[in-house]
Length: 384
Ligand SMILES: C[S@@+](CC[C@H](N)C(=O)[O-])C[C@H]1O[C@@H](n2cnc3c(N)ncnc32)[C@H](O)[C@@H]1O
Image (cartoon, rainbow, N blue to C red):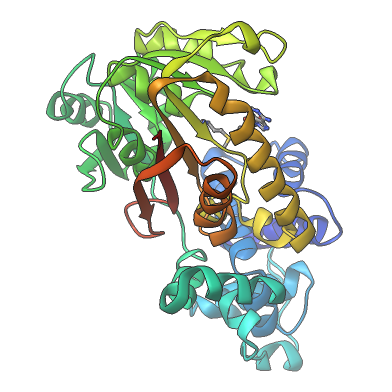
């Protein structure tokens, strides 16, 4: 596809998203109906669409409207691309810009500049103080691709060399000893032997750091295991891991991932968890706004409402309440979220402590949204 044809495709997909279709569905439908597009075309179009979702408000200002065409004009204007060369009507390229489109606008309102729903700005300011604006702007960038080296299989240097031999270039990530940031060839990763044989797993560096911050070893219950990223990291760190999720379907990939990694992880369904007993460590990687990961899931930023946030905070409290009965005498409860919001993090911990007099906080850590990783929060709680 020509550069202009790729832009025309992104415009079409953004129009579907604007009319309410989820981004992944819009991308998949477009790809199914466009067999002529190669993998490079699809990747470039996906990048345009996700960059536009991250800049949903500011691009609309720069492009002078909310259509896919206006958003792409705004996107390319932000990138200082040669609009006249791309919008020329030749072949499948979009038609030339009108006079009004040639003028465009600039983001002026705070929500337009921050690329954030208006209601959320106050929540961000209350949660992040002087870091609020910088964090909002950081969330408009692309997230790094990071792998966790399974050090039960090989050390980090060996893994890095093997990845390189398979066309995946990496550099050490200072956030965690096991983390490598992919600097070239990320699309080769899924078919690389080092990934298929469990030497590396895709996992953000902050998640790795949160697991590395849990010292010791023993029995662990990953109470909100989902796809099992944290469960696998705990197992690789020497914990004997049991995984549970209220939605067992979310754990469907976990047995295959554990097999690849050479770990044994027991799975518990919700109706069975009462029989699981107690553990030295219970990890609650709770359902949350995901605000620390909005570079990867920008639609979630626009979909969050105050009501949904309140409901999540209520759910987190319920999850903690259900999890504590599984903490053994002298054991630890680690509450974690990939959120940046105070109400989901310290606010939740404070509410827990107010309701449970026998507990204390032994450790609290925040990880920022930056070039090394996503935003993340972890609090360690112990019985008095
Ligand atoms: C942040 S995700 C977990 C991600 C996972 N730990 C990982 O590292 O890949 C939160 C998970 O909590 C689960 N969940 C929601 N409500 C729950 C509850 N009441 N009890 C246990 N798990 C719950 C969700 O199904 C979801 O899979």
